[in-house]
Amino acid sequence: MTSVHGGGADVAERDEQEFVVAIPGSAPRPEPRPTRISRVGAALFWVAFGWWLFAAVRVGSDLAQAGFVDGSFRQVPGATVLDAVQDATDGGGAELVALVGLSLTAAIVLLVRRGRRLLGSAAVVLAAASVADAWWHLVP
Image (cartoon, rainbow, N blue to C red; front, side, top):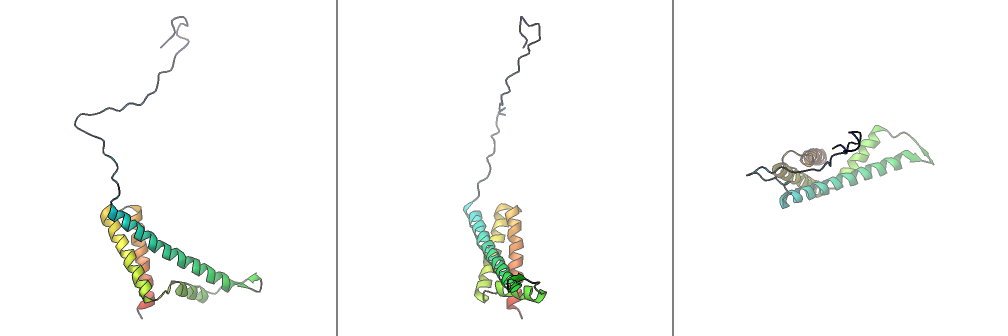
């Protein structure tokens, strides 16, 4: 719009307002809420993730103790690293079987209920790591 007295020099800005066009017969689709079973799958995933996080802390602690001698750091040999990982992840047969069960259940539930989302993919990776760790410890 131009001012009557300004001769077009004063141009007023239009009000930029958002508006929604409603098409008859269609309604906006709300985001699907996670179901109770998918929340259970996510909780199982985080329990298994916490176990692996705790194992990583145990590995770090063992490596720090092995590498810090007489007030100075020394290089840790590869065999010591492998032993630290094996000791940190060896919680006994029952604990490893429970971890595998939790991880696999979480992966299956998340993939079935949520499709192939990021958490479902992470649950599959975590389940594969859990199965590999249990195989390493339990199968001679």
